[in-house]
Image 1 (cartoon, helix red, strand yellow):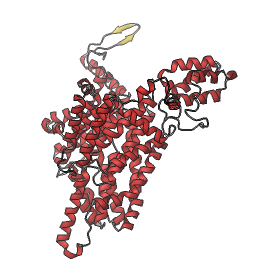
Image 2: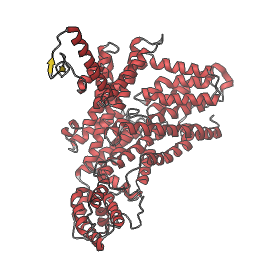
Image 3: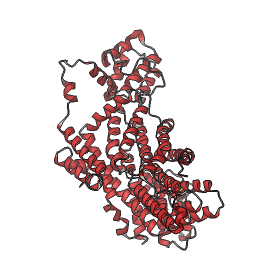
Amino acid sequence: LLPMAAVMSGGYGAVGSGAPLIGDHKEANVEIIDYHPLRKRVRDDRTRVRKMLDFIKSSDGWPWLLVMGVGGAILATPIPSTVPFEGWALLAIFVATIVGAVVQPSGFGLGPLCVMAVSIACSTRCLGIQTALKDLGSKNLWLVVMAFFIARALIKSRLASRVAMNLAALAGEHNTLALAYCFIGAEIILAPMIPSVTARTGSIIFPLIVAIVEARDPDGSRRIGSFLTLCAFQASAVSSAMFVTAMAGNPIAQNFANQRFIEIQGETGAESASIELVSAFNWMLGSLVPGVLCLLLNPLLIYSLHAPRVEDEWLVARAEERRREGQRLDGRAIETLYAEAGARVSTLLFRSTLRKIITSQGDVEGKARAKADELLGEDWEESFGATTSKGADTSSGIRGGQSHRRSRRSPGSADNSDEKEESWSREEIATFLIVVGMLVAWIGEGKLPGLNIDPTTTAFLGVSMLLLTKVLEWRDIVSEVDAWSTLVWLAILSGLANALKDAGVIGFFSMNIGNVLQASGLGTATGFSALLCVNVYSHYLFASCTAHMISMYAAFLDVSLALGVQPLGAALLLGYTSNLMGGLTHYATGAAPVLFGRGYVSLGEWWRIGFVLSVSNLIIFLVIGTAWMKGLGYI
């Protein structure tokens, strides 16, 4: 496979690509052709080996070597007796695919790698093609796809932009961090009412983020978008852990735990009469303190690791270039920068950066400030505040000067263009009514009489209404490339993960982990903490929190009870961590592909932030959460 990869990337010569087939020696300016077949073959092989080594050292070569090395290393390890060879080979293919998604050999992303993975798995008869692709019919997968279309309608109708501007006004024009907390507040309000993370975060919260990014980050650096996306994604994992109705897998875990407790009570009689069953109330109460702490701390951690920009980088670079060339900062210079800036002149980021440049580089006889006043309006400085400090977070303005000047205009102004802009369009009204209808159906599912529509069915109905009302057109559906790309790679990854479970690979690891922990002689607290860590980080092998819970929750609950953990505390902490793991990867939950698919966050940054925050969340739940639950008598 390595030579084939080299040929595909052009790094390794195939026959006819320049590899020498005859000798090429020169003595005394005379080319000597050596037709001896053995010597020719040796030179030919040496040349190919040299080119292959050059390819391995290249930027295309080492990622392929790493991917194939990881897969080969797994295949080379002894295969457990309880796992068939096909299942172990699937594990090698799955892990190699995930590694490939990180290092991206020859520039291939997750989509092409998943296609290659399923082709290898099926051609080697490790997996049937029908089994590999059966998740293309999964209702949860299609809910993810529908979320892309609903988000497109919210953005296209400009309803998302309207709501986002109101949120920005609530947060303050200069504070992206406060805006992140606004989205987290919306997430925590919706979480107990909407049991689908995809519907809640992917269809409702994320379109608002996109609307803000389009207004605030015009040069495409996406730093604001990546910060808000990461905050919303991590908040969805924590909010799902806080309420039993916030994620579809939570009631399954609750049912597993209560059934086990009833069995224990039947086996031991009166001794277990004090076992408290898992309820929606004690689930919420047990997570209240650690969950709120995580929601408050996570945006600060993300800000320290991946802060939004505080300057217009294009303007800074352009001004520095002019300074090096010895050009003075006068009215003509400001006029030139204004003309070159294009649409970014309407953003608060541009205006605040321009003020810093004028202050730091000096103003020739006040002409730079005068020209800025002329071009941007006399109140342009007020749009970001006269006391903005050098390090302030000014990346949050939505069309700063324009919106500020509009607010100062009297209601009786003769210019009605802004009034028309503020009025609701037909598309906005239709989108608003349809989205409200979907919210009612999602929240009222199984709770309101006669309203028991599956969330995916609700999403299909909503998209159908958006098409009927002409908010969306069919070409909008077809051109939503991210949705169809996500459909392919998520279906394949989910199929491979389910095949691993069916082949007994997941069961083998969970059983052996439990046996090791029980035989290790670790104390109750240490052993249970280790088990929770395994529960979280084994999610790198899963594409669904619900599938993870079904596969491992019951087995890990039995191990926890064997370690001596109090039943209710064990059940709740396993449930909490089975949601916190949803913040690890770009395929961890149904909402993750929607947020990742927009392209604001790179794959490496997504995984890095996800791992760091998973450690932080685990520490909070294991230390502060355990102390809180001990005070409640749960553990």
